[in-house]
Length: 435
Image (tube, rainbow, N blue to C red; front, side):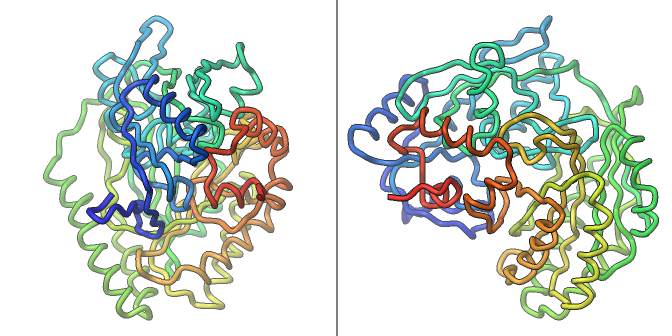
């Protein structure tokens, strides 16, 4: 929130002016907020850190933040689970769990989100053995849109649990999350450079041969960057100066300057992309898992990401390259490609299939519409499903066609939020709610 009372998301592309901003510090305070909105006929949305690129958290009425509900509630070292407050940021959670000798099995490449926001939008990392972060959840305590407090697990409320794991914040407010963990572990991170053609040829072996594997390919360039992580017993490498030079100065400061140059002179984008590809860092380091998954992101952008059947990835990339060569979009941001295990969560993009993810980005302030629309058309052609925290154009009818459990989820939404107080204009479009 700025001094004018305007809320913006991380990239600045979404803005809203809430009439009220609430900071509950207990479950009781959340219940009071929900019941107040029901009595007054108001609507509310919960916001984490605003890292979604859609208006999913935007509210012109009541905005709730759970920033005062952070930290560990209970740790079961023998069971290797922890119950945490839903507003806990992933970076803090990683350190709190580390102090207990525990770690999450996988994380995405940004750790500033709240745990509830991350699971509710289907945030994921990479690795063929691992589902998105929501698959680590084994219990949820929620305040429904009717003001009822429910603790649901796969045993106690099987259907509700599958709907709540990725709920877009449309069923109620998650206040506590119980997650399955493992003992702390170290990994070796490796960054390599490889021609894209070779990468695609060797893709099956690389994706299956490493605990975590992803790659970035650069528009109009030949080299791509491979990012690989595997467990190791080696000692943690201490290289603060080198990491600062690589992660902050080169990947953020210098890239930020080049991005601003592209914004002012768009025709330089292809040249900058080729320069960036030629400077892909090569090296390795060792650290504990929660400190390696995330990447510092200081250069702001807008993003679209689609889930695809794993086997479709090479074909989709070839079609994307052909389209870029033909239409010459002014884009210099690399395209991120990751992998995830299929799951049975109702609104998970990976529902029922082992998956790949392709994320495209455009620097903040540069036109993205034509580029995103063209790439989305390719994604949809190959069975794509949108990441819920990233930009897409689909409405209720099209989403219904792509999610086998769409209708059961909509019925659950109507049951848990009978007055629709958890909706905003964006969610009305998503769920086809009128009137």
